[in-house]
Image (cartoon, rainbow, N blue to C red; front, side, top):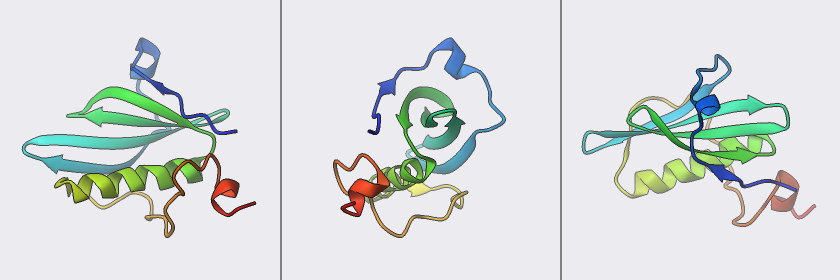
Length: 110
């Protein structure tokens, strides 16, 4: 079962990690919004940064699902007027996650 827990930054979360991977950066009206992926023992953490400051994170059970979800959010923000500020560090997934899907198996009807 996938976890969609969302949390606010804590002192531990604010520590720098060499394992983080920046997925994308978007800009609009002098503001930036970034998404980082941080591998964890039981899945991975998506880290939301606004103007370089961590303001929330979300846990996903698999990095593949996390990356796909992150790019769905990226596409939604671009549709809302945000502009990509750099090339994505990971290739964009070819299929979008099904709303409400909790794992890659759910998306394929397994």
